[in-house]
Length: 77
Image (cartoon, rainbow, N blue to C red; front, top):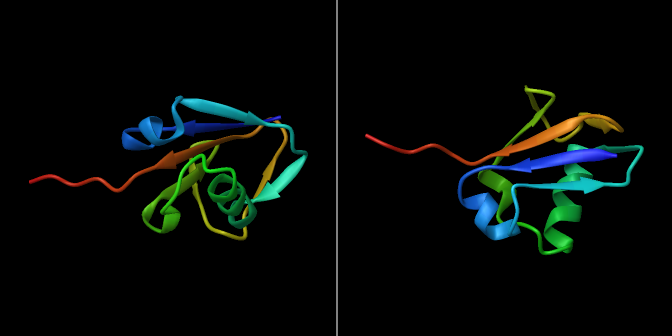
């Protein structure tokens, strides 16, 4: 299982702070598509992804037991 964590406004979109996926492995790109297709969260272009607390890119592979965090852009002044 893969744990996906949501922060800030992404929690509101998803209606939860985390979900679990029954996947052995999935790329970040495929995970983005799955989240959008399942209407969990949308507009993922500006969202950073991290696998086990390390920033990830679209080609990175998430494996069973990993935790993926979706990190929204930070703004402030």
